[in-house]
Image (cartoon, rainbow, N blue to C red):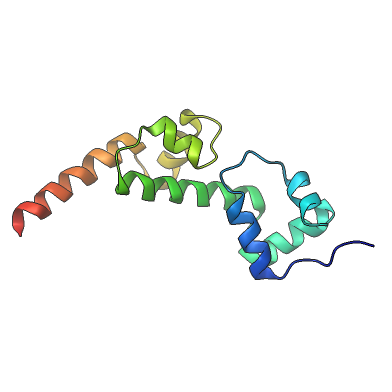
Length: 119
């Protein structure tokens, strides 16, 4: 007997919980008791985009928030966000935000300093 399919909320939780793991869609589908086709259909229904596109954007946005919150090295952020390498993070970050993460961090840090001086 197969497992019942997870609700959209459970599905979303499972995906987000695994976002930093390098895991295949087949493995995720199997963990959720679905075929790959069922998994892709529920993914698109839940998130409104295909798995790879959504997961890459989510990881990029996660890296963005980590850049704003602290001073971890780019390589560490890439690893913690589930990117295979820092160069992959840099490529996706630049595609999404128009500048590489290190430059973004420098610009943001400069703005934070100016805001602190104005208070």
